[in-house]
Amino acid sequence: MAKWCFNYESGEYEYIEKDGFSIDRGEYVYNWDDSEYRRKEDDERRNTTVQSSGQFMNFIFFYLLRMFV
Image (cartoon, rainbow, N blue to C red; front, side, top):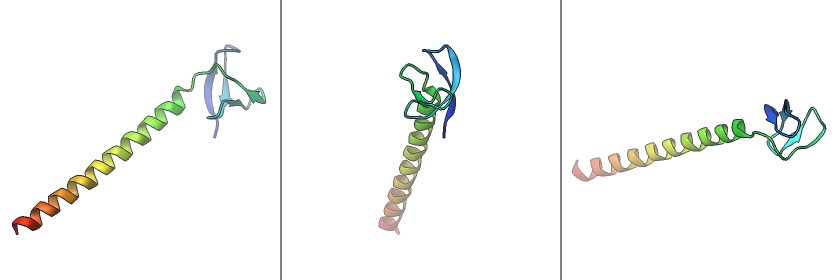
C-alpha cells in the first residue's frame, strides 16, 4: 500500500510504495523520504521484541514458581 511521501527529485509529495515505485509518476524514484515506512517497521520490531520479552519473563516466572512450590 502506497504512502504519501516526499520525493526529493520532484520536490513534491507523491504516493510512493515501499519499494520506491511512485504511483503518481508511474516509475521508480530513488531519492525520496521513506521515514513513514521505517517508522512502521521500527514500531513492529519494537512490539515484537516486547512481546518476546514478556513471553520469556512469563516462562521464567512459572519455571521458578514450580521450583519452589
